[in-house]
Length: 121
Image (tube, rainbow, N blue to C red):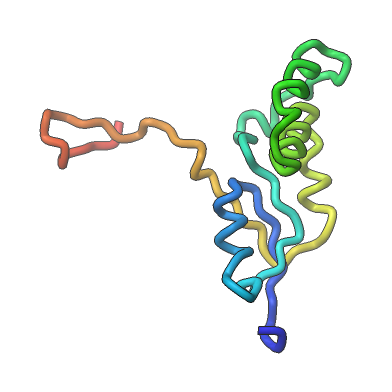
């Protein structure tokens, strides 16, 4: 695959999306992942006010995630201080993949006991 064109991508999504683009056996799947942000950064959280690093909430969160993976720690930190955009855009990618699969809302409602019949609220 080394002779094939590889697209550079940045991902705002979950680690499963990163894995889809990044791991394909012995190859990279034809993509080079420049950056990946996710792990709980919702669209609302992404545009809300930052949490002060001196606050009790910040210290509690840092303690809570201290044993997690570096990916989770980094994303949690970015979520608290709201500085994920510079990380995501530090390198110009060919594509930005936005995956909001973990941000599910109850848009469908069952109108009856029939599990096959749903309508949009």
